[in-house]
Amino acid sequence: MEVESSFSSISSPVFDGENYQMWAVRMETYLEALDLWEEVEEDYTVPEIPANPTLAHIKAHKEKKTKKTKAKSCLFAAVSTTIFTRIMSLKSTEEIWDYLKVEYEGDERIRGMQVLNLVCDFELQKMKVTETVKEYAERLLSIANRVRLPGSSLADSRIMEKILVTLPEKFEATVTTLENTKDLSMIPLAEHLSALQAQEQRRAMRQEGTIEGALAAKHHNNGKNRKQKFKKPHAEGDNSKTEGKTTAGNRKSGVKKEYPPCHHSNKKGHPPFKYWRRPDTRCNKCNQTRHEAVICRNKNQQQNEEAKVTDQEEENQLFIATCFVGSESNENWLIDSGCTNHMTHDKELFRDLKPTNITKVRIGNGDYICVKGKGIISIASYAGTKLIQDVLFVPKIVQNLLSVGQLIEK
Image (cartoon, rainbow, N blue to C red; front, side, top):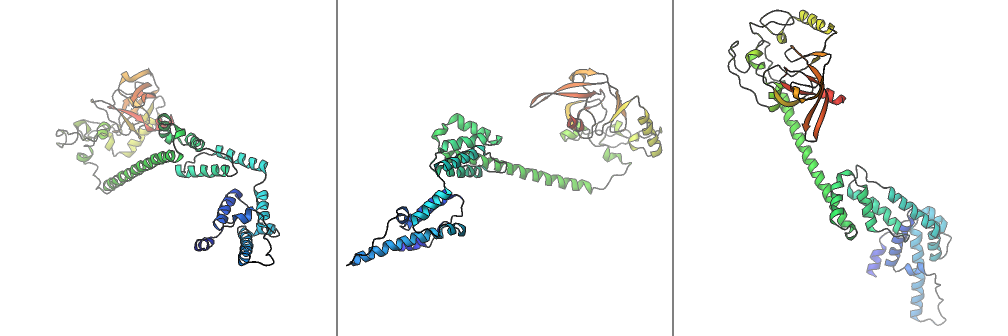
C-alpha cells in the first residue's frame, strides 16, 4: 500500500491530441502500476451486495467500485480540457478508452497511412552541418520508434544503414573502415554510434588545437607588428639601415646576408650596387648625378618622367614591388602580392614561349628591365605538375615570382 500510495503522487501523462500512441503506452503503464488497468481493459459490472452479505462481500464490492471510479478519474485527469469535453458524457472506462483509440489512432487503414508517412519522413532525413552524430541519431530513432508503435517493424540495421549513407564526407574514412572490416548486421547500433562519436570527438579536439595555435601565432605577429610600428623612423639619407634589407629570395628563407664594407660608404650590411648615393650613378628621373631614382627628391621632374613613360603607348610596362636585378638567381618560386604578373628568369621552364607586347617591367629600385617573351610553364607541386599560363620571361630578374592577383583571376 505504501508503494501504491507513493506512485499515485506521480502525475499521469496528459494527452493533448498529438502522439496518441506514445500517450497510450505511457498511460497503460501508469494504470498497471496503480493496479487499475483491468478496470479499463474489461468492462465488467460491479455485482450487487447479496441479501445476507458477509464482511468479505462488502469489502470486495467496495474495492471493485472504488477501482472503477479511480480508473475513470485517471482517464479524465490524463486528457486536456478540449478532449475532456468530448468524453465527459461517457459512463464506463472502456468506452472512454475505445473512443480515444478510434478517434486519434484510427482504423487499420489510417494507421497504415500514418506509418507510410513516417517511413517517407525517415528516408528523407539527412544530417545537418551543425548537427552532431548523437543529435542526428536521436532524430532518426524518434521517427523509427513512432513507426514501431502501431506494430510495424524497422530494424536497427536499417537505421544504421541510413546513418552511414547520409553522413557528411568528413566521416568517409570511418564509414569505409566499418564496411570493410565488420559485418554491419552483426554489430549493435550503439557500437556503431560510439565509433562515429569517437571520431567526431577526435576531430573536434584537433580543430580546437589548430584554432589555439592560430590564435597564438596571431598574437605573436600582432606583438611583432606593434614593435615595428613604434620603431623610430630612419632618416632618408641613412642607407646603413635600409640597404641591409634582404632580397625577396633571402626574405623567404629568413636569413640576412652578410656583406663586406662598401667601398662607397665604408659601411656594412649592403652590396656596393645598392648604395643609392654613388658618385658614378645618374638618376633616370631628374637626370642628375650622385643619387639613384629611388631616393630622388625632384618631384616635378619625377612626375614628368612618369608621365612620359605613361605616354609611351607602344610599350606596355608592369610594376614589381619586391624584386631586384642581380647575378645570383634563385630557382625557388615566391608568391608575391605586390607583383602584377608571373615572371621567371629560367627559359628552360617554358613549354611554350611567344613574343609579347609587354617589353619592360619596373622593379623595386625604380629601374626598368626587359621582357623577352610570355608563355606557359610547368611547376612541380605536392599535388602534381601544374601548368601556369601568361608567365613573363625576364632574364635579369633574380627571383621567380607568382602573382597573387593573377592567380585569383585564373
